Image (cartoon, rainbow, N blue to C red):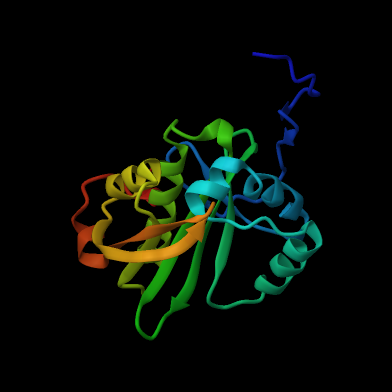
Length: 201
């Protein structure tokens, strides 16, 4: 372990943010992503593990900033930073491709490498699922990841997502083809979960 030399209130250069928390989960809060978060999102998206397991392709910061700006007005997308209780941002979670007529949407999750495996990703996913089914008229949530992304598959299974199938040879990465696992969670399955809902915490 090395001393990062960060100022008080920072963690490896990630400063706590003083932002309105719009939704809460077990030990985490969600706040809406803003344009000024682009640099932080860029750092997370350039992490080699994220690039490999999630399949992100690093883009220029200016391009990401423009995309965040453009997506703020998308009615079919909601992006959030995942925050610790002290305001430290530790991840990004999104509900996108929302189709309120059909009641469907897709979920994506990206955690800071220092906060993977500690349960925060699961807490953030549960919180967003509660938001999707508790506040929106959604019936089906979908998630897609590489079939060899064991940590993501475990988090999704823990949240109640069921494997639906595999998109064979769906993406190219590092010179080889990868299959993509498709998982889903339906409203009745969420209703049957015995865990406390976000508003009960």
